[in-house]
Image (cartoon, rainbow, N blue to C red; front, side):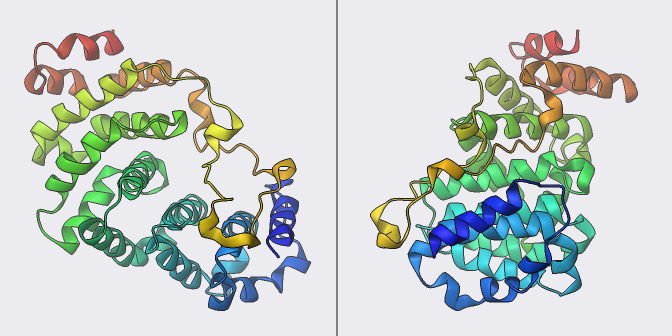
Length: 307
């Protein structure tokens, strides 16, 4: 079966903007059935297929009220150390596909699941995937998300919880992001936070400075050119943990997918242009904050971007 799931996914991926084929519509309900996800060897291929279905068949899924069952699969996957990365992959696809207004009501539960896992059974991989998820959400500012959206959601769960999460997990773990795409997402996230976040502008003034330092640190690290394997999240899908039922078909790997191709290959140039534009539009706000909040040793780094 995993071979079949991979082939079906590849059929949908070959034309990402095309209409959703009728012969796939009857597959949705069986794919969402819990029994399909019990076999460990099915998980990698099923996630890929479900991601492809979400991207091509979002209208059908929303019309049939099938977003919630998909998020139920995310919950099941993210609760497992073996499958946690697949859970985040699926969640990111849902967030980048459906309108934010359609998902607003689910976010308290989504974040409660993630924060509970962070508190009770955190792993290094889970921490890094959580940090990537934060940046993914933060960078999707124009889609109705952003840092302030994440802050509001987490503060509604528990007042004051964002500060320790940001200081003890997001900032330090962001420095550990090794894959070029993960670091690119973090850079975009930090840049948009500096330019647009009302919470960091008024409530977390020190945090604004820490965010700027984190951005400059990531920009200062050499980033290798991205390849297909960098862009698509890679998993050790032939690990024995998945049993003997799964082997990846390397000839039909998932095609490269960069959520922010408009930044181009030189994300540092994009950041400089973006911050200069936002600084100009907001009467020098970024420059003023920098003068007030940055360590004098850090200030020249941002000044260079704004020059």
